[in-house]
Picture 1: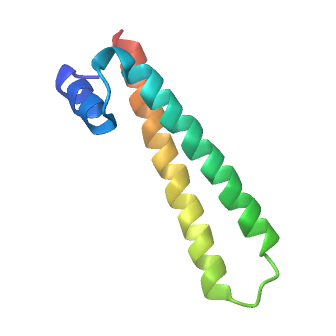
Picture 2: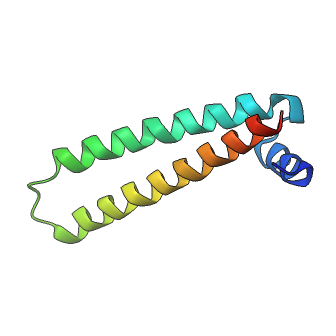
Amino acid sequence: MRPIDMVAWAEALGVGELELPWALSSRVRLVEELHAELTKLRVGLSDAPDEGMLASISSASRALGAAGDRLTDALSDLRRER
């Protein structure tokens, strides 16, 4: 991860550069937990008659998964540089 990206991530998360790996790891765990909860919700409502709602939940699940992948990639880049 480039130094300027490290500074930007640290500022965005409100931490110092030394705390950045911890802060990113924390956000990765949070997104994983949210994704799991959203998956449970989608499964629990799979027989609901509102197809639009189900499509929205599925879309949100995909978007959250993609966000988690991006956070994981940023954390991997950071760890590679240290």
